[in-house]
Length: 324
Image 1 (cartoon, rainbow, N blue to C red):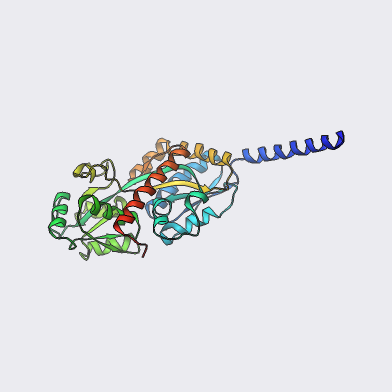
Image 2: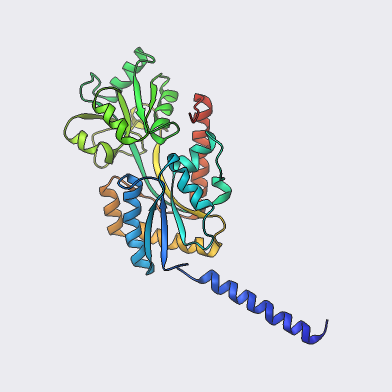
């Protein structure tokens, strides 16, 4: 190799490194960022995403649009993000179902661990175990007592097999050694409709879904499924403090993106989203909808998903739950 050829190669390599470095530092990746949500407009996921997207757009000087790709329990949106653009212009408001539950129930066309990269936890919120006001059950203790005396006669609604509302009931069955019967629905609206009509006894509902009916007395809240009591229901105990320590069955949404996105862009997304999730105005808005922001590091999210997957995988195996 001549000195001239060696010099030319060095210049070419320097240009490649320079271009790669410049590309890696370009942020935002595009003037229009897509935030994908796996559920229809109007639900908790969509509400939280829109609050976060508005502030994020202001901070980074880009348009952040919400792309609602509902269906298959959120798996359609997760597959889209997993196989989407590798430049970081698409981020996903991922959920507990596809990230930690669905892999134990069905064969997915993507691998949540290999194909999606963690960015930061977004929000966390518990379900509330509610019953129709016409039942004789008025407290959580009465619910457990009735279930133990009448195995197989007390049923509960869910938003579908493998959903957070389904597995909350299965986890309580497991820990309390009771036999309540799962009645799956295709969403929160039909589940709530049958609960209000007295055609099902109980429902592990999101607070935002049942709030109006709790306030007008049509539904009775018995317990919440998180680690702490809901601020909006300070007199309603958690399942954990009602005799089942360690019980935790919460809904959560976390930001992830295609694992093909460069690490530098993923780190920048973490920085920007954590900043948004810590903004006082965003915290206030999210809290008003019963959503608790929990920003953190990428590694913290990865470990959290791993723990959740292990927990729900065990419950699914032991309870012999299927995706049907």
